Length: 133
Image 1 (tube, rainbow, N blue to C red):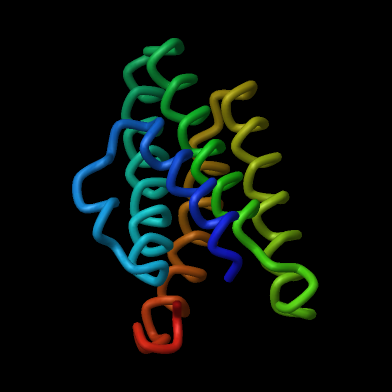
Image 2 (cartoon, rainbow, N blue to C red):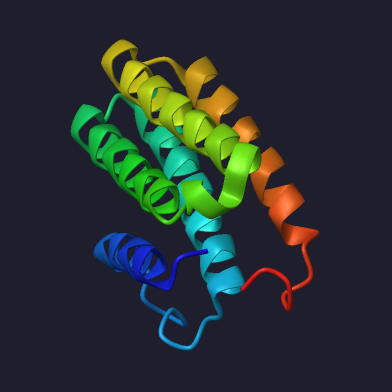
């Protein structure tokens, strides 16, 4: 993982107001925190969507998209090969689906993206911290 790109991802994470522990986090842990943040924003958006809070829902989805874009920008496509390209494609898909969920007020799409993110996070969590950066 490219450290400069990871710093960019950290800036995305800080922008969404979740700075606790970021400064001392390893690259591996930072990615975990980013994924947790995206899942939290999606869950919050779903609740706000159910209550009809369009502005709040939109803000939460925008934050989730920003976090996912931070994860995406931290990928080293040259060194990561097919896996990095697949993640890049998946993150792109997630952001497009979140935008659609926002436009259509579709909780099923939020569930879909959350499920995809949980799958990626579960796999990431299996990587020993020493190997993850």
